[in-house]
Image (cartoon, rainbow, N blue to C red):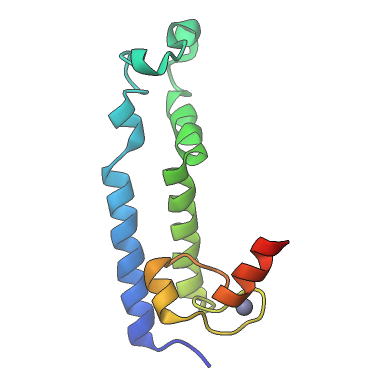
Length: 122
Ligand SMILES: [Zn+2]
């Protein structure tokens, strides 16, 4: 059993759309973390003014990947990799195909609903 090329294409598009959405709603810019007006977060930014230079990007990236959006982006990237290597849509626990309806709701899912609910009980 494998997913059809059409299905894979469909999910590739779906994942790319979600990715673009996430990147568009960049939480860093919205919250003003990269600027100096992070008053509402009470982040002591002036504290580290000295190293705001070149490693600023790295720190922003780290911050981004620590957020829910960043983690999701990471999951979506991995899902795209699975589409490329042909393992996408298979439960990584039992190897069965994950239900398409589940994938449509959660395109980066790596467990079928049965294994997922088993895992949640542990
Ligand atoms: Zn499973």
